[in-house]
Image 1 (tube, rainbow, N blue to C red):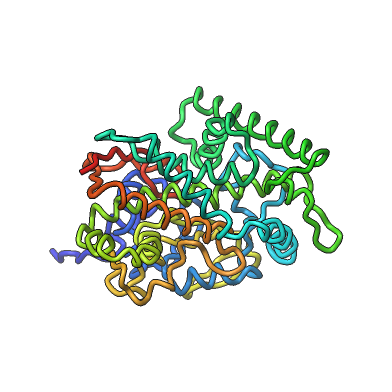
Image 2 (image 1 turned 90 degrees about the vertical axis):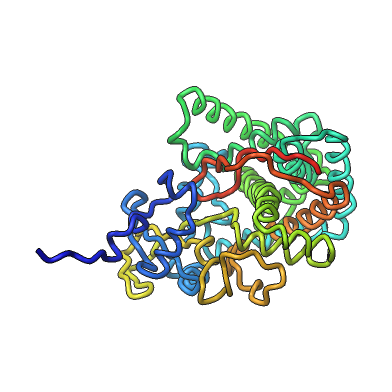
Length: 406
């Protein structure tokens, strides 16, 4: 009897799906298999085409004519979208995207990073002072989550007494994209939080229309480009976008950075000895353990990527995390290396017109926070052997990260 030799399709990695628990546990072997054997693969569970190689991911992200961003919000937020009637910046294409981005850029222009640094440093200090001399603490709850939420809330002008609510609403925005593991009671709470968030923000927007204030919401309400202004729902959508760009990414960046240091202690020693490496470490940790694993586009016509035919209106998933581990672009991609020379090519913040709006803020917060953590703690050890990763299938960061100071 002739023995059949295994083929690529026999591999367990051939059945890649981002919602598979095995993929959630460790997606990187799947990404490596896809890059080698099926760089553009139809994923039946998602009814979408996964694009895994760096070159092809960049092609999809740069070509907004062939690959529209319009399905992104509906897939990511599902029924928990607080501004369902609005066109979101990240799910619009030029020229509409250009109009909205110009309005937001005008609003942001008054708040240079130099002006924001002292407040970020004060917030970092306050959070670490609150931790005090505690030998053990939950890093995300005590530090990584409240830091960017506080910064974003201050930028938007959210009252201090509402920060806890704002933090919960913020976390729910990204949790709603995959509610398959939620109970009915959890879904009901999510729906109520979505309604509460929308009601609060629309009331805030209405208030600043009548009584302008010194915050980003007021800037967005006043901003005008070519005689056009944002509607209330568009302002709300911009605020939601800032929550993702300035909050979720930074929380994940800080938590994932600690995981990177745990896995590569020799790199931590290098960084502690030369703090000038911290900005490079921020970007290298984003490359190595990307908070955004993948996003979505829609093919506007019958097209082709890497020799694979993609039909009109099909959903395409450019896989950021896979692109960031592409062996043809990054030397030894499975190794953290803060001194690598190919780091500028990572796509953790996206690419092209949809490059993450909050990337500079996230980098700044990450650098300030890591410097302060190194100042306070000669060692900071993670006390769990494995991680419970967040529920949203397109994101990757731990839900909890208990640590012990050394």
